[in-house]
Image (tube, rainbow, N blue to C red):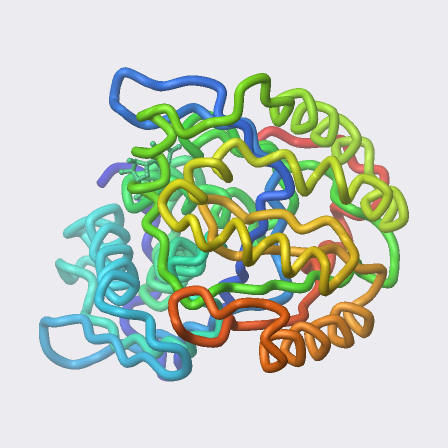
Length: 346
Ligand code: C5P
C-alpha cells in the first residue's frame, strides 16, 4: 500500500515486546445513532497500569500463530490479535523489503486483563499487535494509516494507537476520533479498584439493548463528559479527580442497557458500593465496576476487603463464580504530556 516506508529486511532476531494496557471510560455518553448502525460517543478514556504483554517473533512458514498464557482469552480475543497482524500485513503491502509478503509472526500473549469486561483488553492487544508487527517487519506505516487499520479491527483500537504509549483522551465518533487530553497530572497516581463479575458481557448486545430503549431518561452523562474533557484538557490533579468520583460513577449511558442484560448486577453493584463506601462506576459496556482511590495501596486494601465481602456472602457471586478483583493505577503520564504542552489532535 502507498506510503509504507520499508527499511532493513528480515534481520530481527529478538522478539518485539509490547505492553497492551487496559482502558477505563471515566465517562461514556452516547450522543447519537449512525447510519451504519454504530453509535456516536463522547467518552473520556484513560489507560491503566494493568496491561497484557504481547511478544512477536519472525517465524518460519506461512501462518501466524498465537500462544496465550494467563487468563483464558477465549477464541474471540485470540482472533483479534491474529486479525490485527493480518490487517497490518495488508497495510504494509506486498512490497515488503522488496521480498514480497511480510513474513509470518509467532505471537505470545500474556493475558492479565479480564476478557469481555469493558476494559478493552482485546482491542489493546490488537493495537499492540499492529504496532508490534510493523516493528518486527521494520515497516514504517504512516500514523493515519495505522489508525485506519486499527479502526477497521475494532472501535476501541484507535484509542490505543493514537499515541505511543496511549494516554488520556477524548474519544468521539464510534471511537475513531481520538484527541489527547493533558491527563490527571500528579503523584501518587490515583488507585483504581476493578471488580469484574464472572459474567462475560458482549459489547454488541449492550449497544443493541441501548438501541432497543434500555436507557435512562434525562441522562446527564454528556454534560458530565464534556465538563470532564474540558478539565482534563487543562490537566486535573489527582485530588480533583477524586472529588469528581460521584459524577464520574454516574456518567455512563450504557449502564441501564448492561443491567437489562444481567439484572443480577443491580444487587451486585449495590452491595459493592456498600462494601467500599465509595461511588462505583462501570467501564464501557461492563460488567467491570471501578472505584477511584487516592493511591494503589488504598485500592489494594479495598480489593482485600471486597474479596472478604464476597467470601462472607455480603457481595453476591454473579454468574456463579468469584469476581476478579484487581488493584491498579492510572497509567503513568508520559513526560511530554505531563507539563504545559498544548493539547494535540491525533
Ligand atoms: O467495533 P466493535 O467490534 O468493538 O463493536 C462491537 C459492536 O458494538 C458493534 O458491532 C456495534 O454493534 C456496537 N458498537 C456501537 N457503537 C460503537 C461501538 C460499538 O454500536 N461506538
